[in-house]
Length: 438
Image 1 (tube, rainbow, N blue to C red):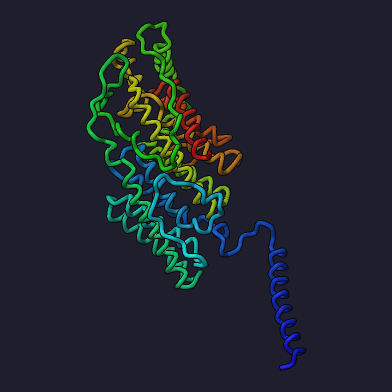
Image 2: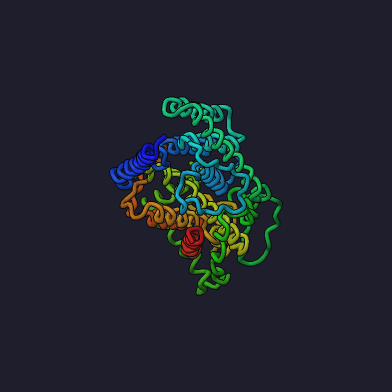
């Protein structure tokens, strides 16, 4: 073979390589800025997440024997399962979330292709089966039906090999997240408890005079390490029966407001009653769903919001329960009846069976609202339709923060919290979120 031919061959090969690179660069430069590719998580809509949230809200409504605040666990572990099922396709910043003690996640093999909505579908089907193990047969069938309906749709959108790998990866994520959830301490949250006795301390309240609910929930493991550090509120005002004292005035405010409740204040209290309903965490899950629908959120942002909003609520409530059983503060109904001489007085809503300080609604709502603000920004006014199905009027808010503030304030009008408990609870919830985002 001649030297000239070899030289020509090498030049042709070099030109071929150069041409390929040039074509690739042209293709990239011609792509619209920010426009996702089909292989990107952000290319896909959040419809699969939306459908699972709808079903999860139904499962929450139908669940029995689960304390109100404990539904934060169903919220957050589902969100984390969805998030981790697509983690290999997320950017480095999103993947940097360090879940507290989560191990056993499946290892992503380089160059393996996934159909991301199928990952999420498998993960949410698996985690909901595990979390709602006591669901009715009808509801269990609904989980199967939703999972299968999506998989049938995916068969027409990707090849069988990719779909199989996606389903397997999502299921493995769900298994790892559920196994992790089983070690967070919730099984001991309702262990036997003897409340301390003394002036100004909590006692069981009418009408049921039930034992303290989940007194050790505050010892649960947060899902984000460090989220509950340095968030505890200061001690409440010193207990006193003196009408001139700060404590007496704090309780008197609850009593005086109860005598002049407006229709809007009553509507506010009822809107945030949450039980019966979708639970307090479930109410915020519904709000998250409505926000995602309003904004047409893509899949990557949807799973991030699902996980982080859930983490904010879950860890906020852990910190709140730590406060409640640290201070063991007397509820308004007890003080008003026994100290203020109003034995027939009742709160507008039934007082929950746990101590007063801080307000759980204030903590979880401030946390959820702050998380939504950080994730979605200033999205403008929002109308909450969560309880349309109960015949309640929708409520309008100018900002996410305003939703959280109203949720906390509703407990004053309900007659079950002091203003101090609400104000400190709002601060506490925001501190938890600041720790999470830090």
